[in-house]
Length: 318
Image 1 (tube, rainbow, N blue to C red):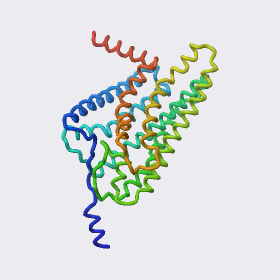
Image 2: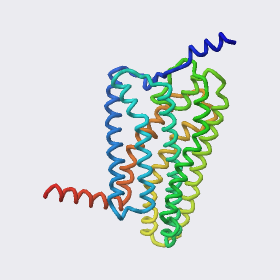
Image 3: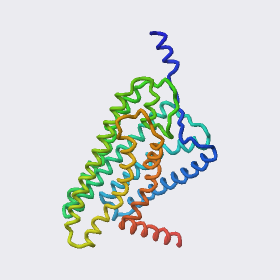
Image 4: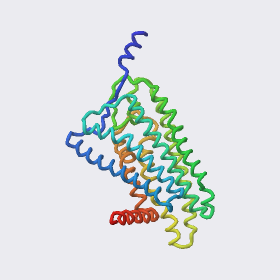
């Protein structure tokens, strides 16, 4: 018994190797440049969108308050993964400490879980705006917005708390090569030197509750929205009412499509390489696209953007 414990202590994992994308060195340089540009655009786009909403009084509405929370979450999610991945690309070293790996995983899933709650809240906001336009201001008041945002953050924390505790308590004795470019749950569980069935069930259960539960709220909200829009007599009125939802529907489709394929499956034992592509979509590409989606598809945001640019130009001419 004593010898087994001693052997276990000697083989405990203190760091992981992030395998990333298995390519030749020249291809890694190209990927590095591409991801660096994407990360820069993500930071610039989301920071600019947050600044735009905060600087324009006409955007101080619940829809845009939720939007800047979404952009903030995008910044944290991407920053939890991208800097380490870029450093690994440029240095060729792919190691990450045990604590660093679990910390990265925790913040990634915390922000990601909160984001799904925010997307559901944004769906509810559009439902109230279109189905109860005269009561919108009283229903979605400052206090209600604060409670919805606080509930989203608390919900995101609670939903990932148990899986995080379960994973952190598992023994990692080696090997220590993570078949991913960050510390995702599925490839981490493959490295556990014990029975992972409980951890897999907990992961699967929380993924179902989070993704399918928040998606249900979104779908139900849009069913009511579509019914309300179809009752509007004029074509122009219907188009105007539904145009406020197009950006949100686009973002929801990108997030839920990739996330359900990756995380809502009964076993995490085998991690397929296409999961990396799905993770690239919802962790790297979508956070970059979000500001552009909302700026290009929302007339009020476009008007404020044009006004802000004109003010900047006038200031520079002085």
